[in-house]
Image (tube, rainbow over the protein chains, first blue to last red):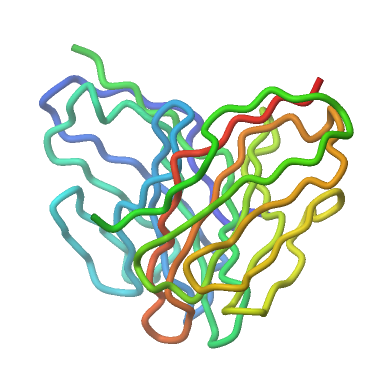
Length: 113
Length: 115
């Protein structure tokens, strides 16, 4: 079962920042937080991941609380093409482990013009 | 360009007619995996492979076979397809785990309809 809780849907105005929350209160010390998104029925697309520190890349920023029980994905300037289902996943991959990703229901983000 | 390529993208076939969905990656990833996605059930792992000649069952392996003879290829085989295998299938790959925890890359999907 997914170890994360996300709101089922969110709306955002085009050009504004989209802040997607995720609760992972049972996260263990060696588990990473990953964010993926799926646009319509395309393959899930990796966005960003982190362990403790906040992370930023060309797509988004990831803010992880100090107690690591929640995180927020930030899309700084949302566009219509960012409309998708966003999945927050916590996972640890030990050497030789199955690498399985457990996708929950995610958040359906709709960016409105 | 780094990518995971699946073929075919769409297939309509009939019950019992063997089919193979191919998956190829050009990133030298050790790990490859197959998922299926169904409405209301999300993505579920079918089979995975940690490296060449090493495969293992995921959560929903019944009715499927896989092989990993080469690092870059991981075909999904349906020996005798049935209508309950109508689904959207995704192949994924990554470097194996450990401290790097590199992300998985997904193909564009294969939509199978079994009549």
